[in-house]
Length: 137
Image (cartoon, rainbow, N blue to C red; front, side, top):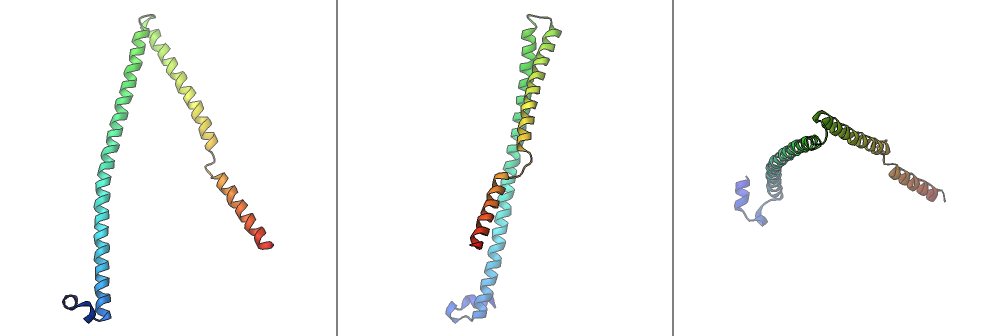
């Protein structure tokens, strides 16, 4: 029936034929758009996976570089004091930095708790009170 309708000019087709053709075209358009969306998401997903892997590799190499710098600090300090003392001094310095970072991090987390948008809630309450007073007057 659609094939016959396609052969006739639009002015000669019935409303039912036109609605049927429109419905079929919309279905096909939606299917094509869904296929395109799936393809696009797959392509982007692959790129995101590759990017995440490269970020992971960068983090690993940065960690190894930091370890090498710590070893270099121990070796440099070992020129002035015995090697074991140089290692202990560098370890103590690292623990101090870790402790300071932990205290600062704890302070930041404490300031962020509870994770409730208090200012937005206050604003909404004020808006509700304003509307209530407007209704009363």
